[in-house]
Length: 80
Length: 135
Image 1: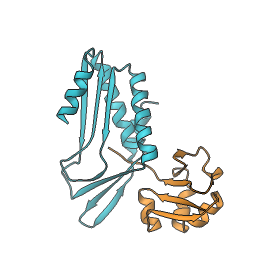
Image 2: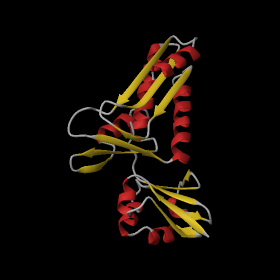
Image 3: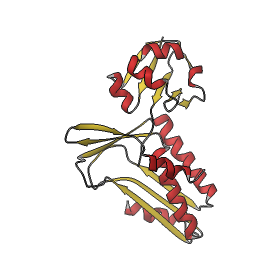
Image 4: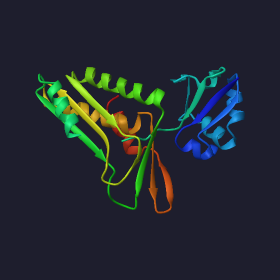
């Protein structure tokens, strides 16, 4: 009964790991509690997005991840 | 790369022009390497949507959008974009559009290794202005 949290880009440095397993279910409050203070601070910023099951959430605070779901934390992007 | 462009050209025999852009790791400063990471469930579908949007917006015959991930050295290719259209202006503009979106609106994260270690790169103000031109 777990949810996998993925830390993308610079968030992996803040988290100290690329992914973390936490107990399911996982809502926004649970996510904030699970990721540590530094990542939580970033998550509160509008420029950081959250995806669940491969879809970006329009309202990340409405997160409701269930057993087996993958939750990706997406900081500002830079490609090319 | 040459083969990809040749195949792309061959696939669009009706086009009046093909424009291509190759982005490389800039060989200057003290950048030793560049690393691109992605999130597969979002990155590829996002690039496919981007190509479709560009094709529709500029009336393209076709678009080729490639982006590498992993570690790249100065002088190496990072990204290849090609567009085929009836008229050259649409092909040029579509390639520009695709690159502006890949730089700051695709699900990719970039960091560079300098003498003192790895540094994450955030989009510059200029990148956001480039993107805003199309809105």
